[in-house]
Image (cartoon, rainbow, N blue to C red; front, side, top):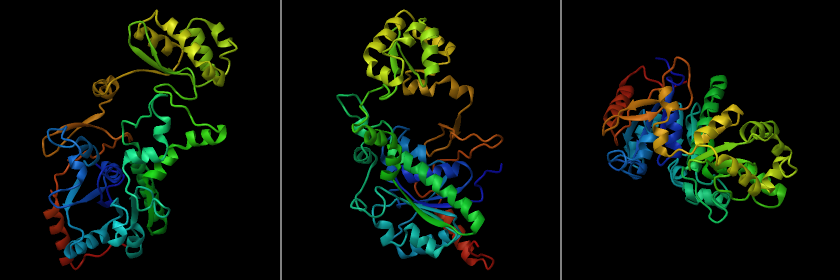
Length: 390
């Protein structure tokens, strides 16, 4: 099967989540990804947890379909190996500690100067320049620095996100930059160096609350599971004790909600509720009115009414319910992926291409492919026909 990226080779000096997630998405669609790891120890994300029969669930998530090359990049012979790899590579990604790549001559700018066709990506905590450029950064700390915790949680308690959103955002922007670079190189023949930082990525995601705060002169309030600036939008208990979520996005939906779901069109014309800002200002009494109506129905009945009114809605599932979700199974959104501890079902990547199945290859053990890669490179050096990509 042909894949969109099956002519692309990626060398990634990666660890944790952001860089491995970016390279895994490339691997999903055919790119050969050579993951450079510390000998014996490997990527420290391998030890984040032992949830999958001794394997880290986070490592398994971000590292399928890759080859693991165990290499001490500070050793002279290892640098020769790395240079040989880079001469044949299309993409290089690194997320070493602040300043480490530059000291080793492995920062994106230095590598593109040596290998002009290379798309080289530096991933860091805070980007180059500025007072934080040498500061180490992890996901939760960047959530703190960007103000995310200040808007997330209940009015009484700020909360971190349950996902590594700074890492995920960074990985996706790195992927975006790599794909743009490959497109540009196809036109010009030249690669480029670029950088993505956790701070910049999550700052972009914080644009709405930042602009709101600048415009209003006050921050977006923490609102728990409710929407901070739209009402009604959030959790509502039904008569059977289960919680239903729904959201109103515009005035047409508001009128439909009152007439079809609540069965009382006059509520839509109540002066306290005729615009979204007024509904937010009077949220407490509005939610009491809705709660009184919902108390007479089961959650299934509420959801059926919301569907009839074309109001977006959802159940409050736990992760176990996600794993059993009928939408996942009806659309066959799992594939079996090999690991060193046996095969495991994993979610397909979110992009669906008609007629193209993503790779979904094995999750490698530390250094699993070292011997094969070194043998391949030695064969290249010995071949008189071997040449760098032009």
